[in-house]
Length: 102
Image (cartoon, rainbow, N blue to C red; front, side):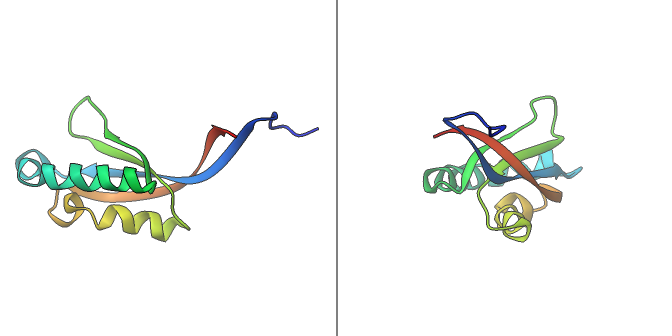
């Protein structure tokens, strides 16, 4: 007997977390529209499953992404305008088991 019930699947994805820099509050407004448009496109393509930021303050953003490996997951975040413009720093990626239904 499998430990995963019928109709349930574990999808291997990556949880990417990007810390906001100390300058994020002043840098983010100028590039936010570009960032959000890119995230929306990556969602439509199926690369990004979920994306958002903690709503407490500007601490960090989280992305749930489909990628071949950790390097590819990090590349997705590092290509974002937030990373290129100094809004994000200290980007990490960890394997994540996403529960889905078949």
